Amino acid sequence: MKPTHLGIIGLGAIGGSLARQGKLAGVPTISGWSPEPAERALAVQQGALDDAPARATDVARVADLLILAAPPAANLAQLDAVLPHLKPGALVTDVGSVKRAIVAHAERLGLGTRFAGSHPLAGTHRHGFEASRGDLFRGAVVYITPCHGGADAAREVAHFWQDVLGAEPVVLDAERHDAQLAATSHVPQVVASLLGDFLARHAPKGSTFGPGATDTTRLAASEPELWTEILLMNRDEILPALRALEESLGTVERALEVGDATALTAWLTRAAEWRRRIGP
Image 1 (cartoon, rainbow, N blue to C red):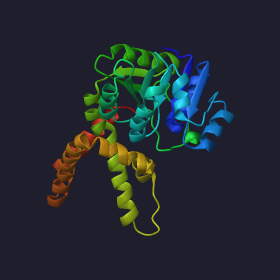
Image 2 (cartoon, rainbow, N blue to C red; image 1 turned 60 degrees about the vertical axis):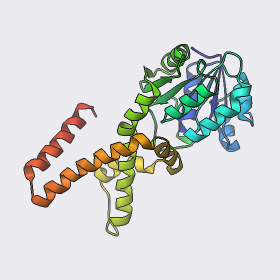
Image 3 (cartoon, rainbow, N blue to C red; image 1 turned 90 degrees about the horizontal axis):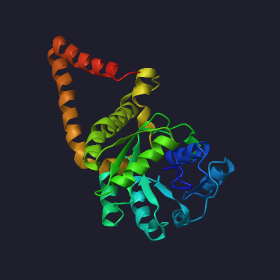
Image 4 (cartoon, rainbow, N blue to C red; image 1 turned 30 degrees about the vertical axis):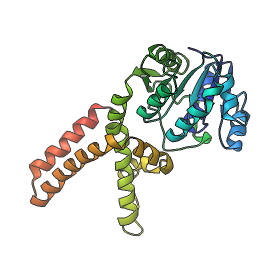
């Protein structure tokens, strides 16, 4: 679908990019809301929004497609708040990194035929409207997680990402999404933050850091409050993944303890070959 009126609740890096890219793609009218008045004003001043009302419900009343682009817990609350105000026939999606909770909540609210979750793999450690871009989603994979009985809504939401924003939608059930992202997104965040915490506490005073440290800790600069929500919301999938990570770390520790070059080289080689396969 190409909405006549796109509504966005949340104007951070993702929500702001949706507005910017929607405008560039020719969506006729885009309304957006942020709890920060200055952020709403900036989005209008920069031409990303046509309207930025003071209440999120005023966005819900007019949108053909409503996108919840707040943090995960806020999206759950917003779904409750906007439900009575949705325009007849409007579709709703979100852009959170955890899908089971919001898909189940939409089903409980009776929105199963009008809601499909979305998760664009285009996040950034930067946040706020100033971090938004007009090309963020072009070529990005976007997971679409349908509700039970919501195949039509999922198809329309997928068309929006593909036809309007130039993304590559992939339909995936919410349970599989959360299990997969625990390993491929949430554990990498934990590891980056773990290394950042280690260096903050143990790097010798006056240390300088090369690309190895800065590259591997980039995600550690992500918004702590957002990632607290994500990690807690998906903890049942993340904890087993972390335990598997402990096994891998144990392999290194044991190899170093006994000076086992063969085991250490095998461990490093497996990691190197995987990284080279996935590209630059």
